[in-house]
Length: 193
Image (cartoon, rainbow, N blue to C red; front, side, top):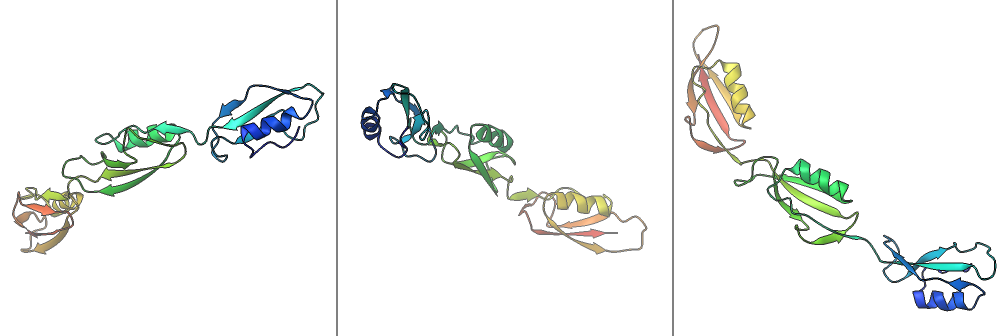
Protein backbone atom coordinates (compact mmCIF):
# COMPACT_ATOMS: atom_id res chain seq x y z
CA UNK A 1 0.00 0.00 0.00
CA UNK A 2 1.48 3.38 -1.00
CA UNK A 3 1.77 6.41 1.31
CA UNK A 4 -1.38 8.50 0.66
CA UNK A 5 -1.42 10.84 3.70
CA UNK A 6 -1.30 14.54 2.79
CA UNK A 7 -2.52 14.06 -0.80
CA UNK A 8 -5.82 15.28 -2.17
CA UNK A 9 -8.43 12.51 -2.52
CA UNK A 10 -8.19 12.76 -6.34
CA UNK A 11 -4.38 12.38 -6.34
CA UNK A 12 -4.63 9.45 -3.89
CA UNK A 13 -7.29 7.75 -6.05
CA UNK A 14 -5.13 8.19 -9.19
CA UNK A 15 -2.18 6.61 -7.37
CA UNK A 16 -4.24 3.64 -6.14
CA UNK A 17 -5.80 3.08 -9.59
CA UNK A 18 -2.33 2.63 -11.12
CA UNK A 19 -1.87 -0.41 -8.84
CA UNK A 20 -3.69 -3.75 -8.96
CA UNK A 21 -5.95 -2.73 -6.05
CA UNK A 22 -9.73 -2.13 -5.79
CA UNK A 23 -10.69 1.41 -4.73
CA UNK A 24 -13.59 1.71 -2.29
CA UNK A 25 -15.70 4.79 -1.52
CA UNK A 26 -13.78 7.36 0.57
CA UNK A 27 -14.68 7.71 4.24
CA UNK A 28 -14.62 11.15 5.88
CA UNK A 29 -13.71 11.72 9.51
CA UNK A 30 -12.77 14.60 11.80
CA UNK A 31 -9.06 15.10 12.34
CA UNK A 32 -7.41 17.84 14.44
CA UNK A 33 -4.11 17.83 12.51
CA UNK A 34 -4.86 17.09 8.85
CA UNK A 35 -6.55 20.01 7.00
CA UNK A 36 -10.05 19.53 5.64
CA UNK A 37 -10.14 17.85 2.22
CA UNK A 38 -6.78 16.09 2.50
CA UNK A 39 -6.05 12.39 2.96
CA UNK A 40 -5.37 11.17 6.51
CA UNK A 41 -4.38 7.68 5.39
CA UNK A 42 -5.87 4.46 4.10
CA UNK A 43 -7.34 1.15 5.22
CA UNK A 44 -5.25 -1.03 5.06
CA UNK A 45 -2.45 1.32 6.20
CA UNK A 46 0.50 2.54 4.10
CA UNK A 47 3.36 0.07 3.92
CA UNK A 48 1.18 -3.02 4.47
CA UNK A 49 1.65 -5.87 2.01
CA UNK A 50 -1.67 -7.01 0.50
CA UNK A 51 -2.88 -9.36 -2.26
CA UNK A 52 -3.77 -8.08 -5.72
CA UNK A 53 -7.33 -6.82 -5.92
CA UNK A 54 -7.49 -5.94 -2.20
CA UNK A 55 -10.09 -3.24 -1.48
CA UNK A 56 -8.59 0.02 -0.31
CA UNK A 57 -10.50 2.79 1.48
CA UNK A 58 -9.10 6.33 1.53
CA UNK A 59 -9.66 8.23 4.80
CA UNK A 60 -10.31 11.93 4.10
CA UNK A 61 -10.18 14.67 6.78
CA UNK A 62 -13.26 16.78 7.54
CA UNK A 63 -10.95 19.06 9.54
CA UNK A 64 -11.37 19.87 13.21
CA UNK A 65 -14.77 18.99 14.61
CA UNK A 66 -16.96 22.06 15.21
CA UNK A 67 -19.22 22.00 18.26
CA UNK A 68 -22.05 24.41 19.07
CA UNK A 69 -21.31 26.42 22.23
CA UNK A 70 -24.30 26.86 24.54
CA UNK A 71 -24.86 30.15 26.36
CA UNK A 72 -24.13 29.99 30.08
CA UNK A 73 -24.66 33.70 30.86
CA UNK A 74 -26.69 33.92 34.08
CA UNK A 75 -26.10 30.25 34.88
CA UNK A 76 -23.85 28.64 37.47
CA UNK A 77 -20.13 28.67 36.64
CA UNK A 78 -19.90 25.08 37.96
CA UNK A 79 -22.61 23.94 35.52
CA UNK A 80 -20.85 25.76 32.66
CA UNK A 81 -17.48 24.22 33.56
CA UNK A 82 -18.89 20.68 33.76
CA UNK A 83 -20.94 20.85 30.55
CA UNK A 84 -18.28 22.60 28.46
CA UNK A 85 -15.56 20.18 29.61
CA UNK A 86 -17.85 17.24 28.84
CA UNK A 87 -18.46 18.67 25.34
CA UNK A 88 -14.70 18.67 24.70
CA UNK A 89 -13.70 22.27 25.41
CA UNK A 90 -10.91 23.65 27.59
CA UNK A 91 -12.39 26.15 30.07
CA UNK A 92 -10.70 29.14 31.71
CA UNK A 93 -12.39 31.35 34.28
CA UNK A 94 -11.80 34.99 35.14
CA UNK A 95 -13.56 36.70 38.05
CA UNK A 96 -15.08 40.16 38.31
CA UNK A 97 -17.68 42.14 40.24
CA UNK A 98 -21.23 42.40 38.89
CA UNK A 99 -24.16 44.43 40.08
CA UNK A 100 -26.59 42.28 38.06
CA UNK A 101 -25.27 38.72 38.58
CA UNK A 102 -25.03 36.80 41.83
CA UNK A 103 -21.67 35.45 42.98
CA UNK A 104 -20.83 32.29 41.04
CA UNK A 105 -22.96 33.16 37.99
CA UNK A 106 -21.47 33.60 34.52
CA UNK A 107 -21.40 37.29 33.47
CA UNK A 108 -20.11 36.68 29.92
CA UNK A 109 -18.32 34.09 27.80
CA UNK A 110 -16.06 33.91 24.73
CA UNK A 111 -17.05 32.58 22.25
CA UNK A 112 -20.64 33.66 22.80
CA UNK A 113 -23.40 31.07 23.14
CA UNK A 114 -24.99 29.98 19.85
CA UNK A 115 -21.71 30.02 17.93
CA UNK A 116 -19.57 27.04 16.93
CA UNK A 117 -15.98 26.44 18.01
CA UNK A 118 -13.30 23.83 17.38
CA UNK A 119 -13.46 20.79 19.64
CA UNK A 120 -10.65 21.13 22.19
CA UNK A 121 -10.52 24.94 21.89
CA UNK A 122 -10.79 27.29 24.87
CA UNK A 123 -13.98 28.84 26.20
CA UNK A 124 -13.39 31.79 28.54
CA UNK A 125 -15.92 32.50 31.29
CA UNK A 126 -16.19 35.73 33.27
CA UNK A 127 -17.65 34.71 36.64
CA UNK A 128 -19.29 37.08 39.12
CA UNK A 129 -17.74 37.74 42.52
CA UNK A 130 -21.00 39.45 43.43
CA UNK A 131 -21.48 43.17 43.97
CA UNK A 132 -18.44 45.36 44.44
CA UNK A 133 -20.45 47.14 47.12
CA UNK A 134 -21.46 46.11 50.62
CA UNK A 135 -23.76 47.70 53.15
CA UNK A 136 -22.44 48.33 56.66
CA UNK A 137 -24.36 45.87 58.86
CA UNK A 138 -25.73 46.67 62.30
CA UNK A 139 -23.00 45.40 64.62
CA UNK A 140 -23.98 47.50 67.68
CA UNK A 141 -23.87 45.64 71.01
CA UNK A 142 -22.13 42.63 69.44
CA UNK A 143 -18.89 41.31 70.91
CA UNK A 144 -15.74 42.58 69.20
CA UNK A 145 -14.63 39.25 67.64
CA UNK A 146 -18.05 38.56 66.09
CA UNK A 147 -18.37 42.14 64.78
CA UNK A 148 -14.90 42.00 63.19
CA UNK A 149 -15.73 38.63 61.57
CA UNK A 150 -19.05 39.93 60.18
CA UNK A 151 -17.32 42.91 58.59
CA UNK A 152 -14.39 40.87 57.22
CA UNK A 153 -16.86 38.38 55.68
CA UNK A 154 -18.09 41.34 53.59
CA UNK A 155 -14.47 41.91 52.44
CA UNK A 156 -14.14 45.07 54.51
CA UNK A 157 -11.02 46.15 56.39
CA UNK A 158 -11.61 46.69 60.09
CA UNK A 159 -9.94 49.13 62.48
CA UNK A 160 -10.82 48.62 66.16
CA UNK A 161 -10.68 51.46 68.71
CA UNK A 162 -10.92 50.36 72.33
CA UNK A 163 -12.33 52.44 75.19
CA UNK A 164 -13.00 51.53 78.84
CA UNK A 165 -11.83 48.58 80.92
CA UNK A 166 -14.67 46.04 80.51
CA UNK A 167 -13.60 42.40 80.18
CA UNK A 168 -16.10 41.68 77.39
CA UNK A 169 -15.94 44.48 74.84
CA UNK A 170 -19.00 45.23 72.71
CA UNK A 171 -19.41 47.60 69.76
CA UNK A 172 -20.53 51.09 70.78
CA UNK A 173 -19.87 52.97 67.51
CA UNK A 174 -19.45 52.22 63.77
CA UNK A 175 -18.02 54.52 61.09
CA UNK A 176 -19.25 54.84 58.34
CA UNK A 177 -22.71 54.49 59.87
CA UNK A 178 -24.93 51.38 59.63
CA UNK A 179 -26.63 50.97 56.22
CA UNK A 180 -24.00 52.97 54.31
CA UNK A 181 -23.12 51.56 50.88
CA UNK A 182 -19.32 51.14 50.59
CA UNK A 183 -16.93 49.45 48.15
CA UNK A 184 -15.55 46.10 49.24
CA UNK A 185 -12.03 46.63 50.57
CA UNK A 186 -13.05 49.89 52.30
CA UNK A 187 -12.02 50.49 55.89
CA UNK A 188 -14.62 50.42 58.68
CA UNK A 189 -13.79 51.73 62.15
CA UNK A 190 -15.56 50.23 65.12
CA UNK A 191 -15.28 51.45 68.70
CA UNK A 192 -15.62 48.84 71.43
CA UNK A 193 -15.92 49.23 75.16
